[in-house]
Amino acid sequence: MGLHLDTRSQEIRKILKQIKVVLANNPNVIEDTIQVNFGEIADSSANIKMYMYINETDYRKFLNIKEEILCSLLALIEKDNIELAYPTQTVYIKNDEGEKV
Image 1 (cartoon, rainbow, N blue to C red):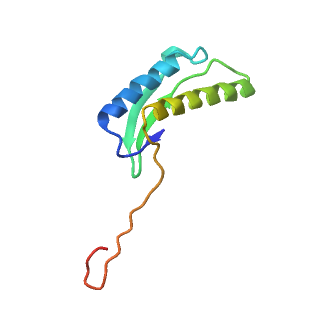
Image 2: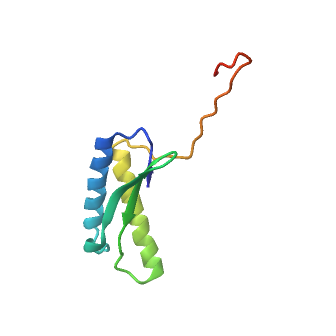
Image 3: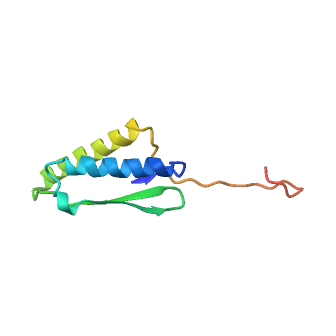
């Protein structure tokens, strides 16, 4: 999950803990497989890496569980007014005098 680069470090720490709680409280997630880490600062996002096993072998049921987890995670970040990142670029244009505009 990529968070906006303006997300403050204390907000990232808080959301990491909250994600771990959401996953641990889901009866379909195998608790001792949960790994949630601040994985990297990329070009346009602060990335949170999540890894877990789901206790389901039926693919349709798995997709429903995955959807439930993702919706719970979106609700979590919405509640804390944290923005997801999207790819961006800044373009600087110089005028004839060489000044950025």
